[in-house]
Length: 161
Image (cartoon, rainbow, N blue to C red; front, top):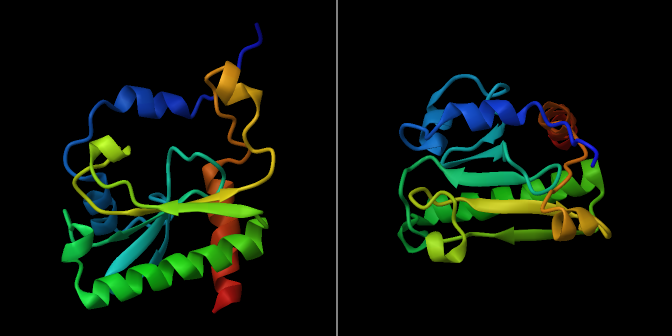
């Protein structure tokens, strides 16, 4: 058997259960690069998923905690999906994915890992990005470091403006 080195996972394993909502805590801090926040809107923000399915896996979330989809204001809703569209454009221009999975997991039975703060996942996909590793080895290989993805996407945002 060959080892698969992933030393950055140590932080996740050792941190234990977070105290409070990580989306709220992240949005309140003034450490966008450290927290991988790509974009801040008036009502919503975008960050890289720290435990991505693929490179460039983004989360779009309202600042307001605990919001159900049907409880979003018209301003929150409009900006949320405008940002989703903008992030799809950004990911296309920076990473050239061949497709996307975009969605909301509302409540635990729908697969939500975070059940108390609404957020939309944007997962770029490429032909062949699922192979034998997840199927047989129960292991997903992420081919790019988070901060490298962050830097590329931040640069792409500058070019977008």
